[in-house]
Image (cartoon, rainbow, N blue to C red; front, top):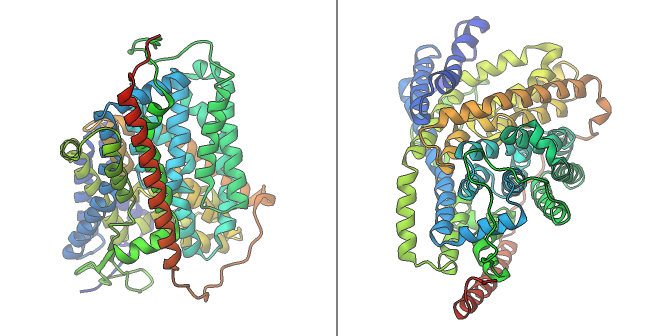
Length: 590
């Protein structure tokens, strides 16, 4: 059985778009107006999408069901796999009592919620986005903020909003790599163009985040720290994206802004410590202090996590892990059964990269740190079971959201929405970011949105005489502000922030900020296309006939050996710290 996608099922693009938009509009209505739970809204939206796909677009019922199953399976792996492991690692840290030390450490830097949000949600989250991506930064940082005592809604909401600045360069630059492969424009000019757009957003984002949680007046009270955080991040993001490429901007900018802000806070403190209205004032117990060794041990889960996530992002290591630990199969009944609008069959392969997946790196980190933080593996198994129970509804939400996304893409509904935006003529640069925003809203991934629309962005820009790198980069940049309202991201943040069943609150919290930032990027892209042309980098198109080189597995094995030695040395050091702690009091009485 084969079936060809239809872009204009009614022969009237206006009517086709109105019908195609129904599932997307339903998600907004269900979460904002009806205030449904996330999994309920996703399941109903999936049903609506299937009805439109089969009755309007003529998609065979069998293919629609298989498409939904394909999406749900992808939702379970690698997305839910990652979320489960991220929350599991955090729960281990809490169960062992080490998170109390982390909270004390953060309080020693600053007890101010505004500054904690900048350090964890903005800077540390950006660092994690650069190494892992695909939901891990929001899952980990939201859980950390809730553990520190943040209001769960604000913790999850600001982590989603903070995650906009780094998404374009996430997972060692994968979104831009995919945009390059699909459009034929080299990675560096796309990275440069995005790196001349997003730093303008990045420099304002810290003030924006603090204003959301505390108000503009309270944000002004810490303007020196806000400037240090925003300017250091934006500067490092600009330099690395323009001169080093798309792989390292998040890692460099995230780590650099952490160092700059922590250094600045040694010489500057806010006049007043700001806390949420319903929580007690910050207290400092002078009779409790922790040694440097105890603090390192408490942070060991995140130290090991960072090392492993960085290692998992190194291509030679990925090659080795994929060579020995990946299953790939053609999805039965769906592979090559759908013909694209160009008549070419669409391959439907399912990859289970069970070793190179980011979730596996987090699992390995958890297994390494369980004895280091003083737990037994028996207790670890109990914590894992509790984590699965905690995440049962978010797992259902993520699976249904991905089923929804796959039906929209496979049926041609997404292409219908894209066709209208592409028909806007000379105004297309203004609407180009909306296409990326729409793609990320539907798929939950800037990488997937770039795979969907980069070629369309390239061809449309050429047809109206605009440099294609402007619109391809706009697809990347517009996508980042759609991440905070993607149902997939909302489900992940709700799971990590203890807001299961309250996804509608989280959606309403972030949606207006998504639109504000989207309009900003749309106006900036229009100016880049026609007014600020000097900002566009010069480049040559990729040679599509380049031969692909086989991976060098020997380098991967060498890196893995170095990684094993590094982790072993770290484990010995932390065990040594733990043994010294047993011989001396854990607390220092002063």
